[in-house]
Image (cartoon, rainbow, N blue to C red; front, side):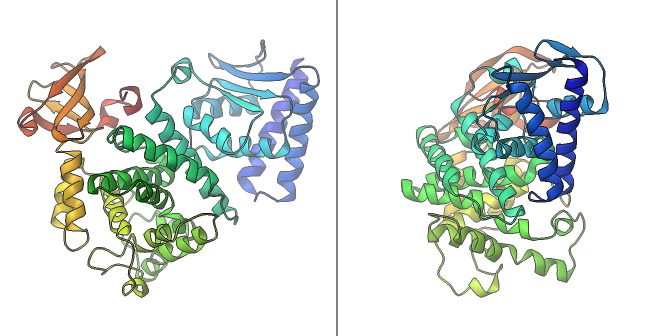
Length: 443
């Protein structure tokens, strides 16, 4: 393929991306740009079973042909590859218009990267496009990370459907919840450790997955049945669906909400329950969770018309999860606190906002320094808590990542701590500040 033809392909891709950013899914402009882009790609695929667009050291390659003319269209594609942590894309014979739209929609949205982007393609049913990942991403990763990022992709798909006015499918959500339950039963703290991962640019999706994971951890601590774990997992994934119906400027307002704005916010539990009620195979207890996750233990929250209704006890468990993740995450209107600080503050709310028995069980189960916590030892070394003994949270394993002088270790050292953990740990450390990406260290 010569450069002029490649430039034409890139121009149609850039045009389709722009139309998707500016117009709704079914807008004629989107359809026109997609058709043009699809035709160009299908023409290329007549001569080859697949085509690869790859970023090699800042130069866009088509197959083995470098595209040295750094046009705005080629630079835009390179920028997308970089922001999504992709080496490139392989497009295969059989590509459909729906697959092309989902691919470009993911690129335009900018909400998932690396393995999460790969999982998002799978969840959306894009079978004729393969993400080419950097070698580190392509290596076989731990099962818990794969499940976590798959859940992120599922939530993104659900949220996008709601934004487009569609009733989401529950199929993928139910499947990923089954995987999450199995992982929680096998290794109770493994997914919880990943819930400590905070991507401040991807809050909407990550908060839902984190609440799902944390809620199942609360349930595990309280000894609920496997079926109830599934309900907690699905309820957590869907609990904030209704926020997608609230104006974004209210959701992201940095200052105090006006009375009218607060009344808008208070609509989101019932709005979310209405959406979930139209999804297939969503249990009534999940609707209880969505309606009741802001009701508080003393039922002083909202919606006020649900206060006299008998809700599932699982709603109180999700409230604990929602509170914990919200307190430990940076938001436009608050600074985050450490896990230990959050649990201390939540204890003060026991009996009022939070169910005291469920909260105590949760705190006892995850321990003083939960899996996923980055901590500074008395020796001044810094380590990541990678495992907590499910039978005794005072026993844990951490990976020492930084030595006593602050140097990062090439090969982290595993260390076992037990007994009075609080006497061996002097502080919690923000992984973001230290440049520690949790999935790189969690087995």
